[in-house]
Length: 194
Image 1 (cartoon, helix red, strand yellow):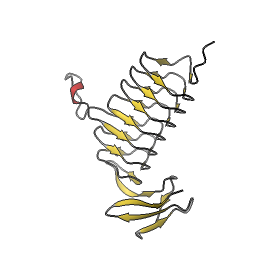
Image 2 (cartoon, rainbow, N blue to C red):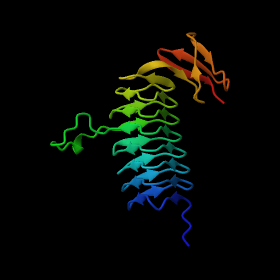
Image 3 (tube, rainbow, N blue to C red):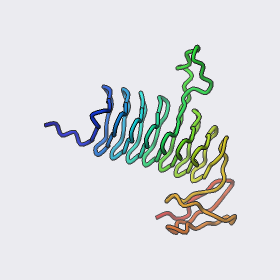
Image 4 (spheres, one colour):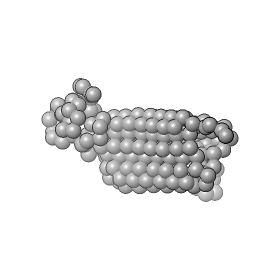
């Protein structure tokens, strides 16, 4: 008996050259392509495709029907909601080969991407940011920003715990966990986080 320290459902495929972290679980009908690295304790939902050459950090949750293509890097503790979409070519055509034009996308630690959101390649989603369901992200998202719409725009701020911070004052306290923040120059800056 082989002790693998991770779980891959029998209906899924893991190509050669893939690294799977301890405690990671890959569910039904997934395909993890060559030279991809999944960190520790990740949960990969049904019908997910990742790779090739993708890096996913520790403790990430990738929900059903997500495809993460070459050029995407996902840091630790990122949540990708059901059917969210990543792209890697800005102006694709079926009849023109553009693999040399892949644009990198970075999703920073603790960010959440809502269900059915589209992340257009070449952007950075800041740490602990929250992309609302159905949004289309075409530009960088600041740390802790709540973005929504098509195309998305910043509509508020979220705490590290995911609670929306309300009010227009420069100083804000999270009603759920009491973390404190200040808004400076269109950025949310942590004052104290627990």
